Image 1 (cartoon, rainbow, N blue to C red):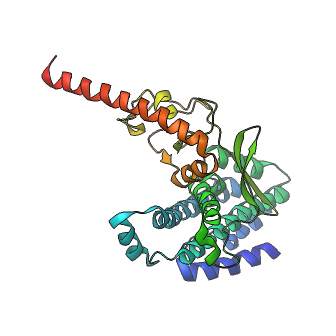
Image 2 (image 1 turned 30 degrees about the horizontal axis):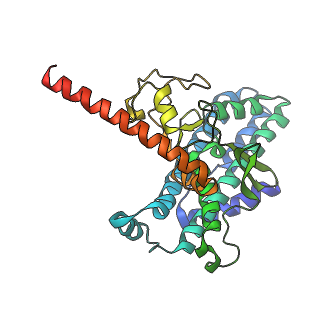
Image 3 (image 1 turned 180 degrees about the vertical axis):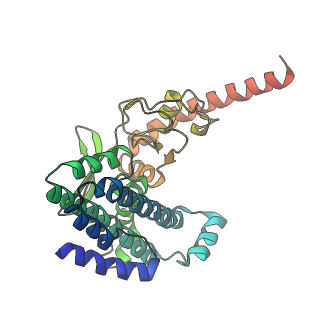
Length: 309
């Protein structure tokens, strides 16, 4: 009950500032109370309500995280446009504060979902809550699976490693206990978000079995090199992953239709390029040759088709 009260106070505060949605504990607890007397009520109301609320939470988190990352990654004229649009004026402190708020929002809602499902299982003496959580993860609706959370983690490490970070002040980290580590030459991001939530992100491409280069996140939750993903999707780098067939499957989990919603992980790309410069330079030269070859073949085939040869 202590967490439910803490969560309610937290959501009231953040909703006043950012209008972010949350889990309606009061309504869900009311449903659970009815479950004591009406056994089947949860089957038709509790889980659908919780799923709807979690979808709104994840969607809102992704939208706001994308804006924060746009501010940091924008260049040229777009940089000034983004600064004016989001009213941060290129201030690193404002980016960090916004990122911190979103990190807290993600953690609180991840814990909230676990707590309410644990309460469900306790009341019903079942494991349906645990099964529902597994279902949410298989549907990639868990906020801790969001690629935008991965990008915020990479942003945090990138900011800490830049010289300008020293001028921002103490307490400027988005995450505590979060770092890029190498085990037997294989990179992993290990992050302790809080006492109850730990996260590890494997950064080895399952296709080339090397550190992901120009990483891309597929909607199934797996991360590959962009060129490796293009090859597995049977498309050229010129056409890109949007050109894959709708039935194309992830080479690892075999889930279909995962390419069209893919996302380039720009902050992660910056982090890996800074952390292993020798490998990055070697891979950059190799891929530049391959990209030029594919581009040449693509435009030659387009020219032949245009001329009817």
